[in-house]
Length: 283
Ligand SMILES: C[S@@+](CC[C@H](N)C(=O)[O-])C[C@H]1O[C@@H](n2cnc3c(N)ncnc32)[C@H](O)[C@@H]1O
Image (tube, rainbow, N blue to C red):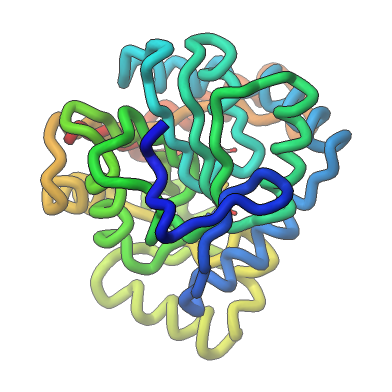
């Protein structure tokens, strides 16, 4: 598979492709948050995967299946793959070639152990900053970033990087926090990507609080309006841009009551009250 730029990455003794990573201040805050969130050994990975598959997978797949026709020839790239829930689904269901990139090395190591137990063969795991992936131009058919591009301060650059690695006709599908009414519940740990306001929030979180609150939650994290997302993708050259509410049920561990679960889900289906937007765009 001629996807990797081997001048930038080397296979290590654990079977992971390792790249030099030098992070911006905002990204370091995110890295330390995600190393805590995804501090999984094999047992924890398996049990969290079971709970994701039970409560959330079907909701995610509705959007993903709607955005691309997957085959065994599809090169599927998951940026910020973490436990690669969607990656495993696509390998199992469509026999896609899976490429997972993350800057959480211990998580990649656990994922590798899990893939070994399952006997998967068609995959690459890459330790890298997704701002600068050791992946050749025009080699990828589909990119999924589930809650990832909001952790990078230069969103223009990351969207351009996605465009660079995609083949013509390929699709980038990302989900990001929405600057909707739901944002009120996130006002203490999320930064709206809006002129003026963004600078104030960044100053408060990074300079005054030294990233302490962000690190306790999801790291440096932006939220976007529908217009933000459309402009970002248009600027990088994408076409067929579709944006909407990204609705999925909460995990039963967090919310058991059926009535409340359905109520929550209902709020997530409107662009005015959802927590997350999806954006799907074609090169
Ligand atoms: C919300 S999780 C997404 C996990 C997975 N996509 C899912 O849907 O379960 C965000 C992931 O992005 C990774 N990440 C964030 N910023 C990154 C960067 N600059 N380079 C590489 N990975 C990054 C984190 O380590 C984390 O695993």
